[in-house]
Length: 258
Length: 258
DNA sequence: AAGTGGTCTAGACCACTCG
DNA sequence: GAGTGGTCTAGACCACTTC
Image (cartoon, rainbow over all chains, first blue to last red; front, side):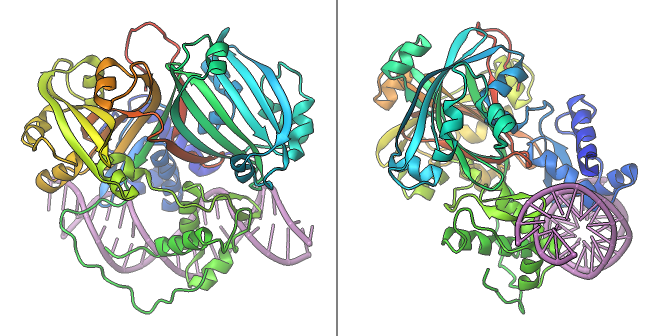
């Protein structure tokens, strides 16, 4: 399977920005120039630059050339699926150990997140995870009934549950929904992480789903403060004008039911 | 500035999903069916559904119809530009008070973020912000020299600096780059927030830029734990700009690579 | 085998920026 | 006024899912 044309163009632009060929604040070539240079249509070029825009590397406004906003590359968001992959990406050694695996009725929140009836028997697992020998994260995950047995059969030191599920069960994580905040370390957190009780932890709650939208797991990951940070870029698509102007309605178009 | 066709379609689909017409797990109509229903081309329909995909509402795989992943609407990340706007969106009353406004040389990090020479005179401001009368956030911001005077002239209880800059100086925030983690409350944080010293705070560091990519401010916002959480969705095929980074260099040296 | 989304083309008109 | 991005159309072929 070959790489799509727009992805090639995006990769080349990304690289050029990263190497400083287009420094921060510089303007990119116009769409038509890129199209000519790559022998591609304007639509394909637009797919490429849209990719860079969602990565926060470039910004655009109607009528002006695109500008470079950042020049550093960022790891793919796919790393968020897996602590183990993230560790590998940093070149660190990671380990993992199950602390508990218990079947019990789903709480209201777990049932809602996993799309199972309230009280259905889910599998609750807790793991301690280390980076280069240091304990940095406690993970507590609720798995839906259809995955319980597969999780129970994993070895105690399984490094990547997601990789194992993908390899042996064909379960692929494709979608993620993330909630990030801070909490005080509880007594178990503190004991496991060798941390001060009541001290700050980064909490990352995450619902992972398959390509068909079926929930795989709802987890609560807690990191020692300082060991991790989350990064998000955004652009305001519609710039609020200083002087509002009247809308021009578009006559003659119905509003079909969707 | 009329609404684009694809945005109308996206809004209708969003609404239908929110109202449960397409529950979680349901499959959307095909692109060709939507195109026929809306008398639009397939390309326009694809723009609409791409919008919903980046919002995390729907997912897609080649060969299969799109599926609904979530049904709750979510505030846009544009709210991240402004504490005041975020408060309004929640229906809460917010106030703000300047604690300090001082000109001083930029530190290395401030200079790098604001794209000014190291040691250039920036304006450093601290504010305490409340929600429905409760102090919930301490904000410390570095503003570039070209904005220093405008900030100094603002009243002490100015609720939204971003709104003021937009109205009186034509400075519009369009791009944001956000770093989210947790820290322990320092003595000033604790005193201002009426909080336990050393207790967990959500830290939101944020670089805001104009449409031309010019930095407006680099701020460090600290919230009481429990008062705020950050929410992001992603799909593996679509690159979304959220990245988890490790901070592997413990002792204080150098700038964080971004 | 039919249906569907992913990719790509080659046009078109408009709104906006910039010199 | 020329250049540029935003939006839209009407085709096309392919890879993949579904039945």
